[in-house]
Length: 430
Image 1 (tube, rainbow, N blue to C red):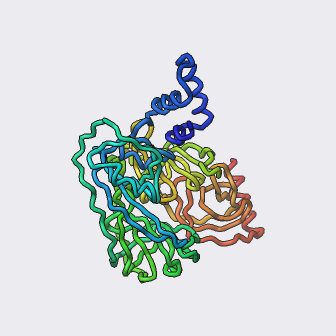
Image 2: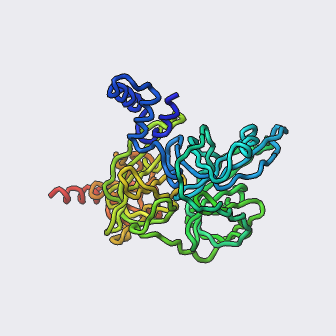
Image 3: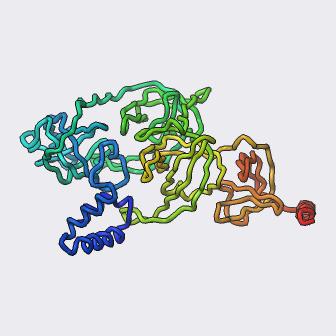
């Protein structure tokens, strides 16, 4: 039973720590509280007993919240892939911070029209559905809690075919999926941007993007623009879309760090400070991953930045100049606005103001901070480069501790170059 209570806080503490706190609560109550009551007290102490709707984009598995019913949809029938009929219905609920949809299926969907009325306040325990805008209720009940909210159901913007100029910011590897009719397909997700900001990209025909890579500007004719999670945008590329190279890159607006608000998805820039090493953890599905805490500063303000999964394993050092696209902001545990960089975002490490053209011949050395190219006199952090011990000549821009190379050549050493390197090394020791 208490596994549902733990799911409300599983992004904050481990299951072992949760069980330990339950035992402590029972002891503090003189063994008068049972396990469920003690679990509720632990959840309350962690400030997760009830959250506001604006907090539903958090990382916990389950959410508990109060909300007022502001609309009940009609019951809809649909065909399942196996040929059977299905039912679906939605209740739109709201509090003073926002609104969301509760989604019900089949027998539950058929019953909600008689079970609930607009204006009633519900206590809901649920989890995310197919997207962050939906909640699948696991348990709910009517309550006498007062919610003063005059909100009306938000009008959902209908998908629209458009012609747009875009910058391709990131593209994930092609992945497969199964359609409702049982046939297979391929798709690519990523991030794009234009003068309005950034958007999630979904491409259902990877061949359309075969000749394009991140960093390229394109003119996209006939994309489908949809409303994404929490008011964001989705750009959909399908068989009706034509992609051609564009002459100029659109300027993507950046949000100053001092103007970042919770429940926004923004593009920001600054320098990394207080870079902590990555920490391993186990995802809920049992697979291993990484998380890393840093701060990003623009010289006047520094915000906490939590980096997840593969991004946490990148070589990062204090002072790195970065641009982060499509990163969500929320209120963190300390009450500060916190940025959360995961697979739906993109971080580019870019040259800082103090940079110069450089060519260096050396050996790739793997270090705890990442790959470096080292010629015995100088060493620069790089991304990529090849296996440990590879000899290369790299050309590009150096900035601080990094080399941003644009050209890489295998290095063939001869006696003259060895003599020159040895003399330089000996001179550095004198």
